[in-house]
Amino acid sequence: MTHPTPALERLAAAFADAFTEGDVDALTSLLDPGAVIWHNHDRSSQSVAEWLGLATHVRAVMRIRYDDIRRHYFQDGWVQQSVVRSTSLDGAELGAVEAVFVALVRDARIVRLDEYLDSAQIPIPLPADGPSEGGS
Image (cartoon, rainbow, N blue to C red; front, side):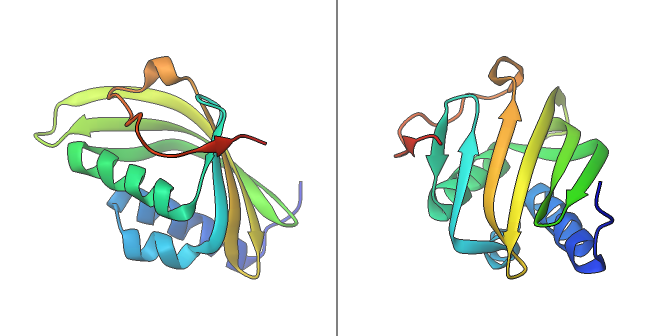
């Protein structure tokens, strides 16, 4: 395991905070405009704009938080293992999903996210109408 640089640690923490807070402006600043976000549950890739739309949808119907965060850093990014807990807007617990994502970084911005989770654990239906590309 590589010892993380302070800048990489800050980027990882800022990304997690921006996602859980639903801060689209912060997420936009942390992601390279050409970044690709891939998910195992549908084996598809999304552009930053498409992924931000999904993140906005999630934020509109629930609140999430990361628990039991474990990050493992490598030269150009990190792997985050965590439990993603969700609550409804009125505070009712919706569920928890064990998740892993791999973030690749270039020039202090995330250029690729690969997300792994069990879609059967997701407490809300994800929009099926967004365009996606075949995964790689």
